[in-house]
Image (tube, rainbow, N blue to C red):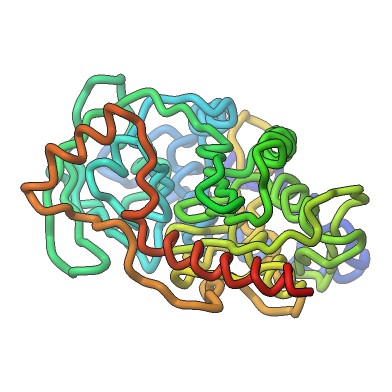
Length: 408
């Protein structure tokens, strides 16, 4: 029965490699069939000799989880219930803390906190390591299990023990879960002297359309230059990132390429556009929480000589994960390719370096006497950009670019 199950599984796992030559594919299958005998032998021993009887399905799932975890920190096996939950996430509204997480070097790591979410307000930042969840150590935890522990009913609390990336200090925080509503365009306004500011939170299906409307509104208000804020943007859909970058690039400019195991290269170029925003001075803000799609956009705009990058080195998460459904409703999420910038640089684990490094942001940990002032600001929903040091530096740079453009 074990051999039969793995025969069926093997067919599913290797259906995506049909572009290989018939002979090499058959050779690889033969080799794997021989290796599966060893796995089948181990499963047979466990099922017969282990002190407690275990359902065969549990043993099979455990084996597949082991395969996925041996690949990289982004590959994972999704049980049927986990796969269904993954599909629900695309709706853009769920109960939780508001953070993107990953397993990096075996540690549960914050990729990016979404702004104005419980996690962000509690002080979690990109690179922070979650050491414990409700007192339970996270060493060896799977990404699926971590997500389950962090999520819960809105209004309930979760206690986290955090190793801060900046200070290397251990902190404990208690966070109240909430409904997380993702806004693609977090903020769009004119700051001063015709300088527009646009904050993109994530790249989803309708992001480009929302961007078009926001740019039209800013143009009516006198936009002469643009600061695009991609800080703490964890990424999203590749096609959305390409669409966003296309708004600021001439037609047929390379935005990103992907390279797979079989040396297949896909090149994504800027889409046909009659955009009016090809020449306005532009600065892009990035930080450690900028990942995936935001890294693609930032690198494309910089390497096509379209924008200047200010801030900190980005996270370095730029690989293609494909979700491959299995016959019983479960799925494999595995890395199938890596992203490369227009100049052929690998972003994955390297990140994108800004042109101008500015590490100081708004204080992550405000002094106690500033707490009541912060509460007032949150209640008024006012955007006091002058307290954002990176943004202030971006404004100064844009002013200089405007002077140069007017002289031309």
